[in-house]
Image (cartoon, rainbow, N blue to C red; front, side):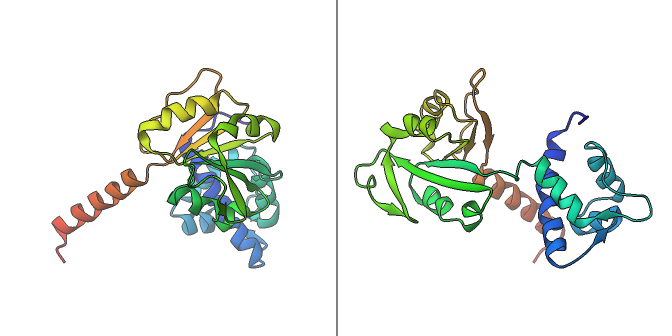
Length: 214
């Protein structure tokens, strides 16, 4: 039985998976918690604690079988199936995401882009025709869309999110720099604030320069 998983562990799981995928492709058969932790900047104890939440996977003294652990993480992360997505907002970020190679893989598929701009509707973006936002809810419901990626201006983000929430979509990945209002029994919401991340980096750079001038 899976124990309660913290947000920190949820963030580490994709990192484990990506590293194990690389090790598997390189032909590595087994990896110890110490070795895997060193590759990810974690302690061996942290690695073992994380995997023990899901029942463990290794054998003491032998490490983790890379291929089996990768497959187990694929199951845990839901990567054994294809997730259908739409991009809402066909501006620069939306277009870039629609054309991002990894999103076009087996696990994540962008099925459509939506916009409100008549000059954009009907244009082609990475092989997809941009559709009118008026078609969004019906398209999501009729095509069993799992995830909506929101890349609209912040002033309309909540309005659009409410509209998306009226559909059967399961989750919203929000790129707008604003906190979305969670809807009761609504989709899962995950936000990516690019500017916040950049400011965190500039803070760290500035703090570093105080003690270590260039």
